[in-house]
Amino acid sequence: MMVLGIDIGGAQIKAGMVDERGAILASRTVPTPADLDAFLVSLHDAVRWLLEATTLPAGVGVGCKGTINPDSTQVETLWGGLHFLQGLRLSELVGLPKDVPVFADNDARVALAGEMVWGAARGHEHALMLTLGMGVGGAVLANGQLLRGHTGVAGNLGHITVEADGDPCACGGRGCLETVFSARAIEAAAWNAVHRGCASVLTRLFREQPQLVTCRTIFQAASEGDDVAAGIIAKAIRRLGAALAGLLHVFDPELVILGGHVADAGADLLVPLQEEVWSRSRGLLGREVPLVEQQVTDKSGIVGAAGLVMAPRG
Ligand SMILES: [Zn+2]
Image (cartoon, rainbow, N blue to C red):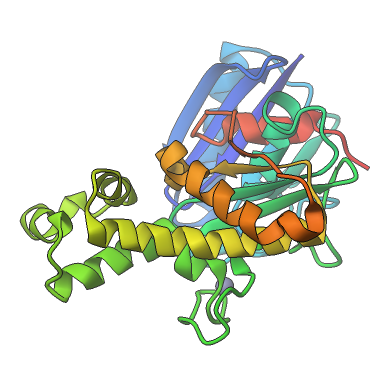
């Protein structure tokens, strides 16, 4: 069986044919156009090329930013460069025969769908997924199903409040998890330290090579003993741990899956985070919930989107 996975991002549209083992057989990437007409031409060109290279897929999975109604595939809310998709049904845009089913959902749920079929959530009924990138995405697997809620925004774990009087967030709230543990938040904290003139390897590095201001550099400096970097990382991890401990009490998952490029820090993140979560949750839960890295390593989003077709649904 082969399915078509499509990832619609702000910069690129990626489409690929994926087999039942989760391997990409053929793929196309095109820049995201600025309006609907150009978008349809680009998408249809990519799909036509894939059909010529392979065959008609058994189903289509589409990952897209914003709030997507999974029943109708309609884009309910979507801001930014892809706003022209708002109100449209993704199933009607793909351009394949009507008997090929089309499933669609937001980025984070798509990532969890991929984990359910080929990754860390396989065989599990209860799991949390956090995608730690420039922002923080989230998705919840509860009773074997992706949790969507009344209006489709359930599982938006990046926007739970961890600081009641914290910084304003893009969502309109304050002190959301995304404002304290995301690549953007960690990098901003490092910049602030540099601007204050803190004695840190970051001060020299960032002034000489501003392109090195990345989460990876800051984690690296922390692991090499830089006190300022270590303080920034420890503070961010403490807050993420506090948020996760609360989430464990709410959802009682079997495991927590961490994806996104900030999770590439690996043990430098997972080990202190696990300690923080355990210290805050052992009393009520009485068991240590494993925190694991995402296993579907495809960064394109194509495999996750394909997983949407194959994931169990209620
Ligand atoms: Zn927020």
